[in-house]
Length: 410
Image (cartoon, rainbow, N blue to C red; front, top):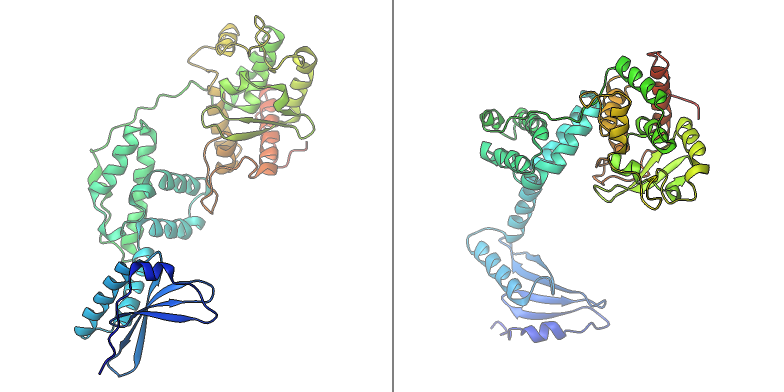
């Protein structure tokens, strides 16, 4: 006659203390709590397999799995056994299916696509696709099976981006998602690419850019105008400083002397827009500007102080007024336009890496491990790039459209 087992209580399970050797507390129906000398409590189910041998299932540890949950798992296993299904084999198959599903999520397929195309697509394009997928598509679609995705799923992604008024990003996300889905179809994990059905369903984007000159000969002309401008010593220095460093206008005017490291040739501050720390490597030309300005404003907090109120930075409109005063029209260049100028020429003319440019623009960039922007990342390379950029600007200003070598001496 089988020995009757009195069911456990929640209090017994909670108060079970470790002993010198492992022991078991039985609940009935093959379920027991295994208590280890280290104090671990693990739910197990003992059952008889069809071949007469004893089988053992693990249901997890207490308190993650409660007594009630363990009993539910026991009952499910007994139901499987009664139907002629080995619970352990069923659990193994379920684990394999979960693993298989994890390999076929949209995010997993996208990561695989990025790896496969890493040698076929320009690095700057690959980094752009990776950034857009991580920022916009993965949060909504990343964990979904790729073969379950339909056109409305991707339309929701586009709608959310449109709602943030990031219309310029929509077409790039559309392109990236489409290539991932075509890759999924080619590898047998999806039936088709549902993205084409979205055509006509998204808002069109009419770019509104800050005016910026990006043709080398025009940049040279504007630089010569800036260098000939004769305003106050602060404004004159700020105008020359701007194209070399291409930071946001508000960050330039609020630069503080305490943020300038003359030994390391770096300007370290927190980006106003994102509140992340940022480093601007300073080329020799920039250091010369600062060294000339230092005796004049070093006794003040700001590098470019207001002439009217010494404790404040120069006005947000000071650079704009200076540009207009120098004869540079609003349709040619704005204070913010130095950033677009640098981004375009560094990429299309100097051939610098996309991620280095984005880092230097203080845009969010993720490394291969998915970690967000780090101010010290690629710092030696960014120093090199900024020296090369300064040398290129000097060439343009002197009327020479010559591209400096990648290694520019400090």
